[in-house]
Length: 289
Image (cartoon, helix red, strand yellow):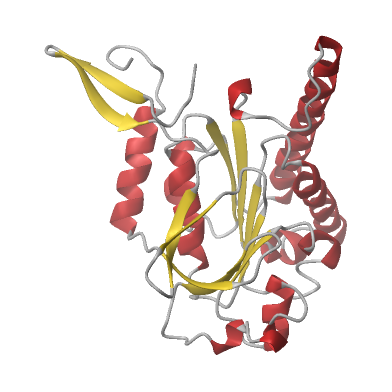
C-alpha cells in the first residue's frame, strides 16, 4: 500500500466513492501549536525522540495528545502507549497495539518485544547491502510501519512501580529503544512531572534530540529538561506563568529553545479523533477502499 499524504481514502456508497480524508503519515510534520508571534509550529518525531517535562498541569498532556492524535490518523503507524495513570492516554487505547498501565512485568515485556523488533529491522537493513542498497535508516517507500512509543509520567516506571531491579531493567531497555529506534522508524516520546536526575538519568536524557520544558519549579529542573545552561541564557521554564498552561520552551535538535503555545484538544475533541481513528483503521472491507 502506497501511504502518501496526497492520497485519499474513500468510502463506498450507492452513488460511488466519497472522499473521507487525506492519508497522513508519521513522516509528515506534526502541528504542535503556535509560537509567540502567532505563527504555526510544526515538528517531526520520525527520526527524533522527544522529552517533555514540567510541573503538573503545565500542559504536557496537550503535547502528548497532539502527537497521539496525529499518529492515530496515520495508517502507517502503530501506537505503543505507557500510561501509569490510565486516563491521560486512555482515549487512544482502542487503537493502540499495546497499552501499558501499572504492571512492571507488562511494561518490561513490551519493551523487550520492541527491542526484538529493533534487532529485526536493523538486520533487514543490513541484508539490503547484499542487494546493492546501502541504507542507514528506514524510509517511507519501504512501507514499514512506524512504531511510536509514548510514555506518560516516566517516574512511575523508573522510580515508583515495581522493585529496584525492575525499574533499572525498564530504564536500560528504554535507553536502548531511544538510542537505536530513530533509524528503525521507532521514535519515542516521554513526559514526566518530575524532571530530576534520579527520574531521567543523564545517559537517557542526552539521547533525546527534542525537548519541551513546560513550567518548572526551579531553574535546575528547567535545565534538566532543556539541557544545562539554557536557563542561565534566559530560557528558564520557571519564568512561565502558572496561569499560562500549554506554554513551553521547545528545543529542536541543534537549535535554540523557542516559546510555543501547545494546541489544546478538549476531551470531546480527543474522543472524536479516537473514534474516527478507530473507524479508519478497521479492516478494509465492506465499504472502505
